Image 1: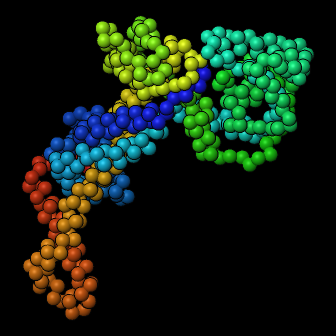
Image 2 (image 1 turned 30 degrees about the horizontal axis):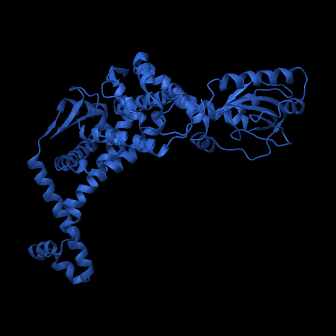
Amino acid sequence: MSLLEINNSSVTDMLKKMLFAIVLFLSLAINSFGSSKDDVFLAVHDREITRDEFLYHFRKNYQEVNQRNVDIFLDEFIILQLKLAQAREEGINHNIGFINELTEYRLILSAPYLTDNEKQQEFVNEALERLKYEIKTDQILVKYEADNNNDTLNAFKKAGEIRNRLFNGESFEEVAKLYSGDRLIVYKPNKDVFISAFETDYHIESAAFNLKKGEISMPVKFTNGYSVIQLADKRESQKNQKTEQEILNLIKDAKDERMQLIEDAFVIKLKKEWDFKENQEALNKICQFADERIYKGNWKPASNLSFEEVLFLIDGKSVLQSNFIDYMQNFETTDRSLTIKQYIHSLYTKFVAERLIQYENLKLPEKYPEFRFQYEEYRDAMLLMQFTKQKVWLKAEDKIGIEQFFNENKTNYMAESENKNPDEIDNIVRTDYQNFLMKEWIAELRAKYKVQINEEVLMSIKKQL
Protein backbone atom coordinates (compact mmCIF):
# COMPACT_ATOMS: atom_id res chain seq x y z
CA MET A 1 0.00 0.00 0.00
CA SER A 2 1.35 3.42 -0.89
CA LEU A 3 1.58 6.23 1.61
CA LEU A 4 -1.67 8.14 2.10
CA GLU A 5 -1.40 11.91 2.35
CA ILE A 6 -3.97 12.18 5.12
CA ASN A 7 -4.83 15.17 7.27
CA ASN A 8 -3.55 13.64 10.52
CA SER A 9 -4.53 16.62 12.68
CA SER A 10 -8.20 15.84 12.07
CA VAL A 11 -7.61 12.22 13.11
CA THR A 12 -5.86 13.31 16.31
CA ASP A 13 -8.73 15.65 17.12
CA MET A 14 -11.19 12.85 16.48
CA LEU A 15 -9.36 10.46 18.83
CA LYS A 16 -9.24 13.12 21.54
CA LYS A 17 -12.99 13.62 21.14
CA MET A 18 -13.49 9.86 21.58
CA LEU A 19 -11.34 9.88 24.71
CA PHE A 20 -13.16 12.97 25.96
CA ALA A 21 -16.43 11.00 25.63
CA ILE A 22 -14.93 8.09 27.59
CA VAL A 23 -13.72 10.39 30.37
CA LEU A 24 -17.10 12.12 30.50
CA PHE A 25 -18.79 8.75 30.80
CA LEU A 26 -16.40 7.64 33.56
CA SER A 27 -16.79 10.91 35.43
CA LEU A 28 -20.51 10.21 35.57
CA ALA A 29 -20.05 6.53 36.49
CA ILE A 30 -19.42 6.91 40.21
CA ASN A 31 -19.59 3.33 41.50
CA SER A 32 -16.55 1.11 41.21
CA PHE A 33 -16.45 -1.23 38.23
CA GLY A 34 -16.87 -4.94 38.67
CA SER A 35 -17.83 -4.80 42.36
CA SER A 36 -20.42 -6.99 44.06
CA LYS A 37 -22.44 -6.09 47.13
CA ASP A 38 -20.19 -8.40 49.16
CA ASP A 39 -17.16 -6.26 48.24
CA VAL A 40 -18.74 -2.94 49.17
CA PHE A 41 -17.17 -1.59 52.33
CA LEU A 42 -18.43 1.96 52.43
CA ALA A 43 -21.37 3.83 50.87
CA VAL A 44 -21.33 7.64 50.91
CA HIS A 45 -24.36 9.25 49.29
CA ASP A 46 -24.19 8.19 45.60
CA ARG A 47 -20.91 6.28 45.70
CA GLU A 48 -19.97 2.77 46.82
CA ILE A 49 -16.35 2.07 47.78
CA THR A 50 -15.02 -1.46 47.75
CA ARG A 51 -12.72 -3.09 50.26
CA ASP A 52 -9.85 -3.14 47.72
CA GLU A 53 -10.24 0.54 46.91
CA PHE A 54 -10.16 1.49 50.60
CA LEU A 55 -7.08 -0.68 51.22
CA TYR A 56 -5.32 0.83 48.19
CA HIS A 57 -5.70 4.35 49.64
CA PHE A 58 -4.94 3.23 53.19
CA ARG A 59 -1.66 1.58 52.22
CA LYS A 60 -0.63 4.66 50.24
CA ASN A 61 -1.15 6.89 53.26
CA TYR A 62 0.09 4.75 56.13
CA GLN A 63 3.44 3.00 56.31
CA GLU A 64 2.58 1.45 59.67
CA VAL A 65 -0.35 -0.94 59.23
CA ASN A 66 -2.39 -1.45 62.40
CA GLN A 67 -6.02 -1.36 63.56
CA ARG A 68 -5.77 2.06 65.19
CA ASN A 69 -4.53 3.61 61.96
CA VAL A 70 -7.43 1.98 60.10
CA ASP A 71 -9.91 3.81 62.36
CA ILE A 72 -8.07 7.14 61.97
CA PHE A 73 -7.85 6.80 58.21
CA LEU A 74 -11.46 5.63 57.87
CA ASP A 75 -12.70 8.89 59.41
CA GLU A 76 -10.40 10.94 57.13
CA PHE A 77 -11.54 8.90 54.14
CA ILE A 78 -15.23 9.42 54.94
CA ILE A 79 -14.68 13.20 55.17
CA LEU A 80 -12.97 13.09 51.78
CA GLN A 81 -15.89 11.16 50.27
CA LEU A 82 -18.42 13.58 51.77
CA LYS A 83 -16.65 16.52 50.11
CA LEU A 84 -16.54 14.67 46.80
CA ALA A 85 -20.24 13.82 47.05
CA GLN A 86 -21.14 17.50 47.27
CA ALA A 87 -18.71 18.40 44.47
CA ARG A 88 -20.42 15.88 42.20
CA GLU A 89 -23.86 17.03 43.27
CA GLU A 90 -22.94 20.59 42.29
CA GLY A 91 -21.62 19.36 38.91
CA ILE A 92 -17.94 20.28 39.29
CA ASN A 93 -17.05 17.00 37.53
CA HIS A 94 -19.08 18.09 34.47
CA ASN A 95 -17.07 21.26 33.97
CA ILE A 96 -15.43 21.31 30.51
CA GLY A 97 -12.08 22.47 31.88
CA PHE A 98 -12.16 19.67 34.45
CA ILE A 99 -13.00 17.04 31.81
CA ASN A 100 -10.27 18.33 29.46
CA GLU A 101 -7.58 18.11 32.14
CA LEU A 102 -8.77 14.65 33.14
CA THR A 103 -8.72 13.58 29.48
CA GLU A 104 -5.07 14.63 29.16
CA TYR A 105 -4.17 12.69 32.30
CA ARG A 106 -6.03 9.60 31.14
CA LEU A 107 -4.21 9.79 27.80
CA ILE A 108 -0.89 9.51 29.66
CA LEU A 109 -2.10 6.92 32.19
CA SER A 110 -3.67 4.61 29.60
CA ALA A 111 -0.75 4.60 27.12
CA PRO A 112 1.16 1.63 28.68
CA TYR A 113 -2.06 -0.43 28.66
CA LEU A 114 -2.97 0.27 25.03
CA THR A 115 -0.06 -1.44 23.33
CA ASP A 116 1.42 -4.90 22.92
CA ASN A 117 4.18 -4.63 25.50
CA GLU A 118 5.56 -8.04 24.63
CA LYS A 119 5.95 -7.10 20.95
CA GLN A 120 7.37 -3.72 21.96
CA GLN A 121 10.04 -5.41 24.09
CA GLU A 122 10.87 -7.72 21.17
CA PHE A 123 11.65 -4.70 19.01
CA VAL A 124 13.68 -3.09 21.80
CA ASN A 125 15.79 -6.26 22.21
CA GLU A 126 16.19 -6.59 18.44
CA ALA A 127 17.33 -2.97 18.11
CA LEU A 128 19.75 -3.33 21.04
CA GLU A 129 21.42 -6.23 19.24
CA ARG A 130 21.50 -4.50 15.84
CA LEU A 131 22.93 -1.28 17.26
CA LYS A 132 26.04 -3.22 18.26
CA TYR A 133 26.90 -3.37 14.55
CA GLU A 134 27.05 -1.23 11.41
CA ILE A 135 26.42 -2.54 7.92
CA LYS A 136 27.20 -1.41 4.38
CA THR A 137 24.86 -2.42 1.55
CA ASP A 138 24.39 -2.19 -2.20
CA GLN A 139 20.76 -1.83 -3.26
CA ILE A 140 18.61 -1.58 -6.34
CA LEU A 141 15.16 -0.15 -5.64
CA VAL A 142 12.18 -0.83 -7.88
CA LYS A 143 9.48 1.72 -7.11
CA TYR A 144 5.76 1.52 -7.79
CA GLU A 145 4.21 3.07 -10.89
CA ALA A 146 1.64 5.61 -9.72
CA ASP A 147 -1.99 5.30 -10.98
CA ASN A 148 -1.40 1.78 -12.23
CA ASN A 149 -3.36 -1.07 -10.66
CA ASN A 150 -0.68 -3.58 -11.70
CA ASP A 151 2.20 -1.49 -10.35
CA THR A 152 2.89 -3.74 -7.35
CA LEU A 153 3.01 -6.91 -9.42
CA ASN A 154 5.13 -5.27 -12.11
CA ALA A 155 7.59 -3.93 -9.54
CA PHE A 156 7.85 -7.35 -7.90
CA LYS A 157 8.51 -9.04 -11.25
CA LYS A 158 11.24 -6.51 -12.15
CA ALA A 159 12.84 -6.93 -8.71
CA GLY A 160 12.81 -10.69 -9.27
CA GLU A 161 14.54 -10.29 -12.64
CA ILE A 162 17.18 -8.04 -11.09
CA ARG A 163 17.78 -10.46 -8.24
CA ASN A 164 18.26 -13.37 -10.68
CA ARG A 165 20.80 -11.38 -12.70
CA LEU A 166 22.77 -10.49 -9.57
CA PHE A 167 22.56 -14.05 -8.29
CA ASN A 168 23.93 -15.33 -11.62
CA GLY A 169 27.04 -13.17 -11.28
CA GLU A 170 26.26 -9.82 -12.89
CA SER A 171 27.43 -6.85 -10.83
CA PHE A 172 25.18 -4.14 -9.37
CA GLU A 173 26.79 -1.61 -11.74
CA GLU A 174 26.06 -3.78 -14.81
CA VAL A 175 22.45 -4.41 -13.83
CA ALA A 176 21.93 -0.74 -12.95
CA LYS A 177 23.19 0.28 -16.42
CA LEU A 178 20.87 -2.25 -18.04
CA TYR A 179 17.83 -0.66 -16.36
CA SER A 180 19.14 2.93 -16.48
CA GLY A 181 16.30 4.02 -18.76
CA ASP A 182 13.65 3.08 -16.21
CA ARG A 183 13.03 6.11 -13.98
CA LEU A 184 11.46 3.90 -11.30
CA ILE A 185 14.60 1.80 -10.80
CA VAL A 186 17.20 3.39 -8.54
CA TYR A 187 20.72 2.12 -7.84
CA LYS A 188 22.04 2.85 -4.36
CA PRO A 189 25.74 1.86 -4.13
CA ASN A 190 27.24 1.63 -0.64
CA LYS A 191 29.81 4.44 -1.16
CA ASP A 192 31.53 3.17 2.00
CA VAL A 193 28.65 4.46 4.15
CA PHE A 194 27.88 2.32 7.18
CA ILE A 195 24.43 2.40 8.79
CA SER A 196 22.78 0.78 11.79
CA ALA A 197 19.26 0.34 13.15
CA PHE A 198 16.74 3.19 12.67
CA GLU A 199 18.68 4.62 9.70
CA THR A 200 16.64 3.13 6.84
CA ASP A 201 13.25 1.55 6.12
CA TYR A 202 12.61 -1.08 8.82
CA HIS A 203 11.93 -3.92 6.34
CA ILE A 204 15.11 -3.13 4.43
CA GLU A 205 16.99 -2.92 7.73
CA SER A 206 15.70 -6.34 8.82
CA ALA A 207 16.52 -8.00 5.51
CA ALA A 208 20.04 -6.51 5.44
CA PHE A 209 20.87 -7.53 9.03
CA ASN A 210 19.80 -11.10 8.28
CA LEU A 211 22.23 -11.43 5.34
CA LYS A 212 25.75 -12.81 5.44
CA LYS A 213 28.54 -10.79 3.83
CA GLY A 214 28.22 -10.99 0.02
CA GLU A 215 24.75 -12.57 0.20
CA ILE A 216 21.90 -11.20 -1.97
CA SER A 217 18.37 -10.89 -0.63
CA MET A 218 15.09 -11.87 -2.22
CA PRO A 219 12.99 -8.81 -3.23
CA VAL A 220 12.15 -6.92 -0.02
CA LYS A 221 8.90 -4.92 0.07
CA PHE A 222 9.29 -1.44 1.52
CA THR A 223 7.08 1.65 1.67
CA ASN A 224 6.66 2.26 -2.05
CA GLY A 225 8.46 -0.52 -3.86
CA TYR A 226 10.81 -3.49 -3.67
CA SER A 227 14.51 -3.58 -2.90
CA VAL A 228 17.19 -6.12 -3.79
CA ILE A 229 20.03 -5.92 -1.25
CA GLN A 230 23.58 -7.23 -1.01
CA LEU A 231 25.45 -7.04 2.29
CA ALA A 232 28.81 -5.48 1.38
CA ASP A 233 30.32 -5.35 4.87
CA LYS A 234 29.55 -5.58 8.59
CA ARG A 235 31.56 -4.28 11.55
CA GLU A 236 31.19 -3.49 15.23
CA SER A 237 29.53 -0.14 15.81
CA GLN A 238 31.73 2.94 16.14
CA LYS A 239 28.90 4.88 17.84
CA ASN A 240 27.85 5.21 21.44
CA GLN A 241 25.27 2.60 22.44
CA LYS A 242 21.75 3.72 23.26
CA THR A 243 19.78 2.86 26.38
CA GLU A 244 16.52 0.88 26.32
CA GLN A 245 14.56 4.08 26.98
CA GLU A 246 16.24 5.88 24.08
CA ILE A 247 15.43 2.95 21.80
CA LEU A 248 11.84 2.90 23.03
CA ASN A 249 11.55 6.62 22.22
CA LEU A 250 12.79 5.92 18.67
CA ILE A 251 10.28 3.09 18.27
CA LYS A 252 7.44 5.30 19.49
CA ASP A 253 8.22 7.88 16.81
CA ALA A 254 5.13 7.86 14.56
CA LYS A 255 7.40 7.68 11.49
CA ASP A 256 8.94 4.37 12.54
CA GLU A 257 7.27 1.30 11.07
CA ARG A 258 7.83 -0.72 14.23
CA MET A 259 5.10 1.30 15.93
CA GLN A 260 2.56 0.22 13.31
CA LEU A 261 3.66 -3.41 13.64
CA ILE A 262 3.21 -3.19 17.43
CA GLU A 263 -0.29 -1.76 16.95
CA ASP A 264 -1.11 -4.50 14.43
CA ALA A 265 -0.10 -7.16 16.97
CA PHE A 266 -2.16 -5.42 19.66
CA VAL A 267 -5.23 -5.25 17.40
CA ILE A 268 -4.96 -8.99 16.68
CA LYS A 269 -5.02 -9.65 20.44
CA LEU A 270 -8.00 -7.34 20.92
CA LYS A 271 -9.93 -9.01 18.10
CA LYS A 272 -9.56 -12.33 19.88
CA GLU A 273 -10.32 -10.98 23.36
CA TRP A 274 -13.41 -9.00 22.32
CA ASP A 275 -14.76 -11.68 19.94
CA PHE A 276 -14.49 -9.45 16.86
CA LYS A 277 -16.82 -10.47 14.00
CA GLU A 278 -17.09 -8.66 10.69
CA ASN A 279 -19.59 -8.57 7.84
CA GLN A 280 -17.63 -8.44 4.59
CA GLU A 281 -20.80 -8.10 2.51
CA ALA A 282 -21.65 -4.86 4.35
CA LEU A 283 -18.16 -3.51 3.56
CA ASN A 284 -18.42 -4.63 -0.08
CA LYS A 285 -21.69 -2.71 -0.44
CA ILE A 286 -19.90 0.52 0.56
CA CYS A 287 -17.12 -0.22 -1.97
CA GLN A 288 -19.74 -0.90 -4.65
CA PHE A 289 -21.48 2.47 -4.34
CA ALA A 290 -18.61 4.79 -3.35
CA ASP A 291 -17.16 7.07 -6.02
CA GLU A 292 -14.07 9.32 -6.40
CA ARG A 293 -15.42 11.82 -3.89
CA ILE A 294 -14.16 9.33 -1.29
CA TYR A 295 -10.61 10.67 -1.83
CA LYS A 296 -11.75 14.16 -0.80
CA GLY A 297 -13.65 12.90 2.23
CA ASN A 298 -17.00 14.16 0.96
CA TRP A 299 -18.70 11.05 -0.43
CA LYS A 300 -22.15 10.37 0.97
CA PRO A 301 -24.48 7.63 -0.27
CA ALA A 302 -27.58 8.55 -2.22
CA SER A 303 -30.65 9.19 -0.07
CA ASN A 304 -32.50 6.21 -1.54
CA LEU A 305 -29.83 3.80 -0.27
CA SER A 306 -29.67 2.50 3.29
CA PHE A 307 -26.34 1.88 5.00
CA GLU A 308 -27.43 0.80 8.46
CA GLU A 309 -26.28 -2.82 8.31
CA VAL A 310 -23.90 -4.14 10.99
CA LEU A 311 -20.34 -3.77 9.70
CA PHE A 312 -18.69 -5.55 12.63
CA LEU A 313 -19.25 -6.57 16.25
CA ILE A 314 -16.97 -5.89 19.21
CA ASP A 315 -17.92 -7.81 22.36
CA GLY A 316 -21.40 -8.25 20.86
CA LYS A 317 -21.82 -4.50 20.27
CA SER A 318 -22.68 -3.33 16.76
CA VAL A 319 -20.78 -0.85 14.62
CA LEU A 320 -22.80 0.14 11.54
CA GLN A 321 -21.93 0.99 7.95
CA SER A 322 -23.05 4.57 8.62
CA ASN A 323 -20.50 4.86 11.45
CA PHE A 324 -17.70 3.98 9.04
CA ILE A 325 -19.03 6.32 6.33
CA ASP A 326 -18.99 9.18 8.86
CA TYR A 327 -15.44 8.20 9.84
CA MET A 328 -14.18 8.27 6.23
CA GLN A 329 -15.20 11.91 5.93
CA ASN A 330 -12.38 12.82 8.33
CA PHE A 331 -9.81 11.86 5.67
CA GLU A 332 -8.63 13.50 2.47
CA THR A 333 -5.85 12.39 0.13
CA THR A 334 -4.31 13.51 -3.16
CA ASP A 335 -2.70 10.09 -3.62
CA ARG A 336 -4.66 8.13 -6.25
CA SER A 337 -2.31 5.13 -6.42
CA LEU A 338 -4.95 3.08 -4.60
CA THR A 339 -8.22 2.15 -6.25
CA ILE A 340 -11.42 3.27 -4.52
CA LYS A 341 -11.83 -0.22 -3.10
CA GLN A 342 -8.21 -0.38 -1.88
CA TYR A 343 -8.50 3.07 -0.33
CA ILE A 344 -11.72 2.16 1.50
CA HIS A 345 -10.10 -1.04 2.79
CA SER A 346 -7.08 0.93 4.06
CA LEU A 347 -9.39 3.28 6.00
CA TYR A 348 -11.47 0.34 7.21
CA THR A 349 -8.35 -1.23 8.73
CA LYS A 350 -7.65 2.03 10.60
CA PHE A 351 -11.29 2.31 11.67
CA VAL A 352 -11.39 -1.22 13.09
CA ALA A 353 -8.12 -0.64 14.98
CA GLU A 354 -9.34 2.65 16.46
CA ARG A 355 -12.70 1.20 17.52
CA LEU A 356 -11.04 -1.82 19.16
CA ILE A 357 -8.52 0.36 21.02
CA GLN A 358 -11.29 2.76 22.01
CA TYR A 359 -13.31 -0.13 23.44
CA GLU A 360 -10.27 -1.49 25.27
CA ASN A 361 -9.71 2.00 26.70
CA LEU A 362 -13.26 2.05 27.98
CA LYS A 363 -12.75 -1.35 29.62
CA LEU A 364 -9.43 -0.54 31.33
CA PRO A 365 -11.04 0.29 34.73
CA GLU A 366 -12.72 -3.14 34.76
CA LYS A 367 -9.68 -5.10 33.61
CA TYR A 368 -7.00 -3.40 35.71
CA PRO A 369 -7.83 -2.36 39.31
CA GLU A 370 -4.50 -0.52 39.67
CA PHE A 371 -5.40 1.61 36.63
CA ARG A 372 -8.86 2.34 38.04
CA PHE A 373 -7.52 3.34 41.46
CA GLN A 374 -4.84 5.61 39.98
CA TYR A 375 -7.32 7.25 37.64
CA GLU A 376 -9.97 7.77 40.33
CA GLU A 377 -7.35 9.05 42.77
CA TYR A 378 -6.24 11.73 40.32
CA ARG A 379 -9.83 12.59 39.40
CA ASP A 380 -10.84 12.92 43.06
CA ALA A 381 -7.74 14.97 43.90
CA MET A 382 -8.56 17.41 41.08
CA LEU A 383 -12.19 17.57 42.16
CA LEU A 384 -11.28 18.08 45.81
CA MET A 385 -8.76 20.82 45.05
CA GLN A 386 -11.20 22.81 42.91
CA PHE A 387 -14.08 22.42 45.35
CA THR A 388 -12.07 23.12 48.52
CA LYS A 389 -10.75 26.27 46.90
CA GLN A 390 -14.32 27.36 46.28
CA LYS A 391 -15.69 26.32 49.68
CA VAL A 392 -12.82 27.24 52.04
CA TRP A 393 -9.67 28.82 50.60
CA LEU A 394 -11.31 31.72 48.78
CA LYS A 395 -13.68 32.35 51.68
CA ALA A 396 -10.73 32.45 54.05
CA GLU A 397 -9.41 35.47 52.12
CA ASP A 398 -12.61 37.46 52.74
CA LYS A 399 -11.59 40.46 54.91
CA ILE A 400 -15.09 41.03 56.29
CA GLY A 401 -15.40 37.36 57.28
CA ILE A 402 -11.95 37.38 58.93
CA GLU A 403 -12.71 40.55 60.83
CA GLN A 404 -16.03 39.17 62.08
CA PHE A 405 -14.34 35.94 63.14
CA PHE A 406 -11.63 37.89 64.98
CA ASN A 407 -14.18 40.05 66.83
CA GLU A 408 -16.12 36.97 67.91
CA ASN A 409 -12.95 35.26 69.18
CA LYS A 410 -10.90 38.30 70.28
CA THR A 411 -10.18 36.93 73.75
CA ASN A 412 -8.38 33.93 72.21
CA TYR A 413 -5.67 36.22 70.81
CA MET A 414 -5.11 38.61 73.75
CA ALA A 415 -2.12 36.71 75.16
CA GLU A 416 -0.50 36.28 71.73
CA SER A 417 -0.92 39.98 70.88
CA GLU A 418 1.53 40.84 73.66
CA ASN A 419 4.32 38.71 72.12
CA LYS A 420 3.69 38.92 68.37
CA ASN A 421 3.53 41.69 65.79
CA PRO A 422 0.27 42.48 63.89
CA ASP A 423 1.31 40.55 60.76
CA GLU A 424 1.91 37.39 62.78
CA ILE A 425 -1.46 37.79 64.51
CA ASP A 426 -3.17 38.26 61.12
CA ASN A 427 -1.65 35.02 59.85
CA ILE A 428 -2.76 33.12 62.95
CA VAL A 429 -6.31 34.51 62.68
CA ARG A 430 -6.47 33.69 58.96
CA THR A 431 -5.35 30.10 59.61
CA ASP A 432 -7.85 29.71 62.46
CA TYR A 433 -10.62 31.12 60.28
CA GLN A 434 -9.76 28.66 57.52
CA ASN A 435 -9.88 25.79 60.04
CA PHE A 436 -13.20 27.12 61.35
CA LEU A 437 -14.66 27.16 57.82
CA MET A 438 -13.42 23.63 57.21
CA LYS A 439 -14.97 22.29 60.45
CA GLU A 440 -18.22 24.08 59.69
CA TRP A 441 -18.28 22.62 56.19
CA ILE A 442 -17.58 19.08 57.44
CA ALA A 443 -20.38 19.37 60.01
CA GLU A 444 -22.79 20.40 57.23
CA LEU A 445 -21.68 17.47 55.09
CA ARG A 446 -22.14 14.94 57.91
CA ALA A 447 -25.66 16.24 58.45
CA LYS A 448 -26.51 16.28 54.75
CA TYR A 449 -25.22 12.95 53.39
CA LYS A 450 -25.82 9.38 54.48
CA VAL A 451 -22.80 7.20 55.32
CA GLN A 452 -23.02 3.42 55.64
CA ILE A 453 -20.14 1.21 56.82
CA ASN A 454 -20.17 -2.53 56.28
CA GLU A 455 -19.04 -3.60 59.76
CA GLU A 456 -18.35 -7.18 58.67
CA VAL A 457 -15.95 -5.98 55.99
CA LEU A 458 -14.36 -3.55 58.48
CA MET A 459 -13.73 -6.39 60.94
CA SER A 460 -12.26 -8.56 58.19
CA ILE A 461 -9.94 -5.73 57.15
CA LYS A 462 -8.70 -5.29 60.72
CA LYS A 463 -8.27 -9.01 61.11
CA GLN A 464 -6.31 -9.18 57.85
CA LEU A 465 -4.01 -6.36 58.98
